[in-house]
Image 1 (tube, rainbow, N blue to C red):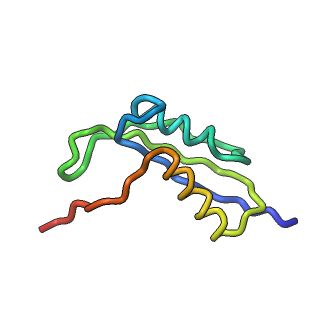
Image 2: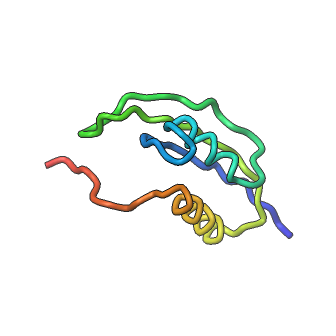
Amino acid sequence: MQSSTYAIALGSNRCGRHGGPVAEVRAAIAALDGVVATSPIIGSAPLGPSIRRFANAAVLLESALTPPQMLARLKAIERAFGRRRGARWARG
């Protein structure tokens, strides 16, 4: 079975069941199979109308999943973490 390398960006600016944004990113990394490298988790100031700081990281992972299967897996992890889709801010 062929394996692919994926670069995945992760980020959070909300507290969740795992704790603050940094803890949420750590837990998201732990939920991924096949991680071969992880960046540091970096905090950053909010942009736009948001007032919460962000925590961001990236991982490299090896997986036999196809790109559509990987996307489905990542979306499932987002749902499990309580991610809600909603209105996004825009310049007006």
